[in-house]
Length: 209
Image (cartoon, rainbow, N blue to C red; front, side):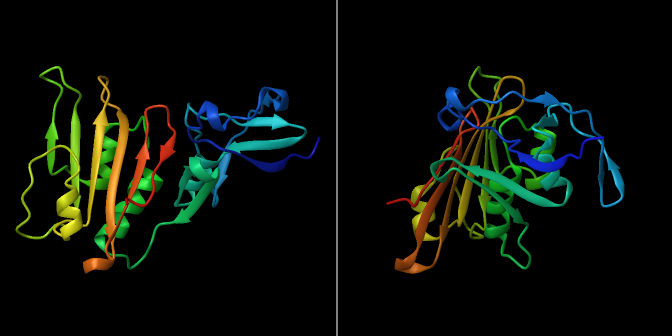
């Protein structure tokens, strides 16, 4: 039997702009395999496949990472696959930002989103033929009041809320678009940065100027 070495296949959404050029495409074969993670059998989700290329097994990195309790994200602008442990002893904002960046993805359903982030602070259903939207506030002041379904930039600048997450939903109840704004620092040293995940799975974000 041939020996299969373990490789990595990025099991997260990559856009056409980050795909390998056509001249560099490869031919691979489905590799039927079952998984055992830390001695326990783990079923591969139907959306994932294992491939055999040149006697190497390429496995979905998201499936493996999350099975080990890690988070994974793809940073389009740098073409970096980032794998990270969930932060320990972190404040509310840092933890919610990590969950958003490393665990929340286009295609997740409402049950999953509530399981990692809880109930939203404001929401609109699609009953009025508008796209359903949820808003989460991170570490808001006790007297903070804001009813909008968009980012409260002034609230972030003034430190009334340390982060806001806007989730747009598709008609079939799946995450369609993710918009995160969060601040770090205090007073005049406060900086605001953004993180986006678009409907095609591509990502964006930067420091807000």
